[in-house]
Length: 83
Image (cartoon, rainbow, N blue to C red; front, top):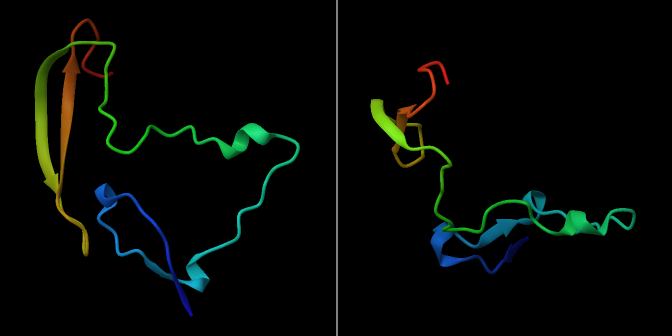
């Protein structure tokens, strides 16, 4: 048995999930704020409080069954390289 769920198109996921992968929502009556997500909205752009001085390294990480992902090592202005 499976359920089809509504997902934002940006996720690019197949919207059908087997019941084993789903669980019912449990409201936390002691802390109702837990219902609100603390994550950034999908598609939100990152903002940094520091300026980029230099991109030290960039690489492409490839994992099985996933799209390649580009990662960067950044040298921030005003911070040592270890940060």
